[in-house]
Amino acid sequence: MRYVRSMSLVIVVGVAAYFGGNFLGEYLLAREEISFKAKRAAVAEAATVEHIHLGVGDTLPAIPLQTLDGREVRLDSLVQGAFYLASVHPSCGTCVDEMAEIAYRQDRRKKLGSFVFITAANPREMEDVRDSLGLENPFLYDHRGRLLYQFGLDIFPLFLLIDEHRCIRELVLGSLLSSEIEAAITASEIAGR
Image (tube, rainbow, N blue to C red):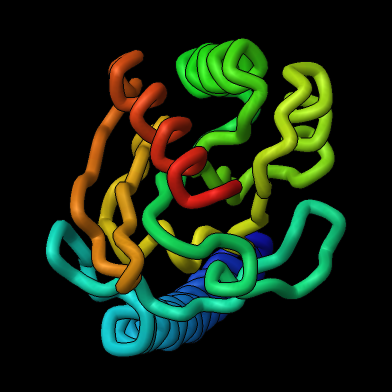
């Protein structure tokens, strides 16, 4: 009798585990498929809306940006003529060194160069770096990297030479040469900045 009861219990537990496992497995597969479809749709939307892979010769898109204190701004309102758009990150040693070099050369010449700095990092951290270096150039916050994402690059520093027609003339990965920094400062003197 005991044997029959324990066998019945084993059979009931086995059947419950079988059907419960099947149900759970199907549920998890369906959930995974829904998650996959949502991710694929998000990637497709990003590819059609924002991900363009810009390069030299392309026109810089008019994406709204923010100052580090959160005010909406457009590049057109900040800079006239050619300028370097510098993508930097506060935790990037090369970026900080490059900003320090630009600050030093601008201070020595007593003139701001044609540099606009942009970051997708925490604006407060960027403010701290800017203030410690004494840079007075415009600093912008690229929320979620919307502008820089279009270049398909995730490298710091990244310098884009933008002409007066907002066309990308040069893309520099890494540091600028001292002569390029000096040329940007001289160009701003000629433009009357």
